[in-house]
Length: 115
Image 1 (tube, helix red, strand yellow):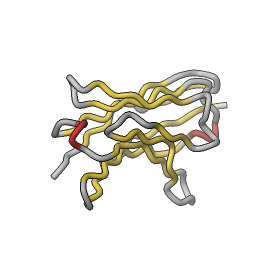
Image 2 (cartoon, one colour):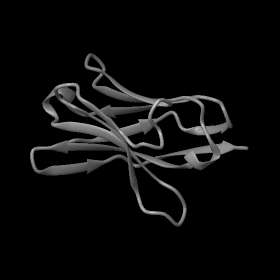
Image 3 (cartoon, rainbow, N blue to C red):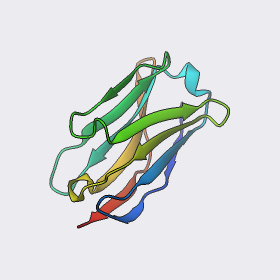
Image 4 (spheres, one colour):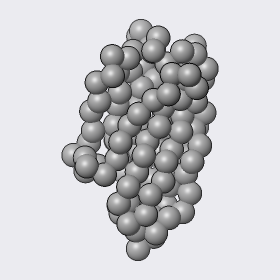
């Protein structure tokens, strides 16, 4: 079982930055992969970025060069640094953990980018 708690969302102007945090209830290196997904109104949930237990990262094309996923093992926390934000980045952002065959989700945090 893995509990995930997100924080860091909010309202920001286009071109600004936000950092999202996802605190996990267990050692993140024991989790196969963690990531961030987002869901905009009327759209399907989509992958934003992932990081494996080995440190490999993957990004959606739409955020490459602007977003960075990272982790702090001492805090069991995964971060999503979002720079050069655009109005189309507006969505609820969800933290995700894939552990063995199970998938876990956080409650989501709203990110709104104004133009």
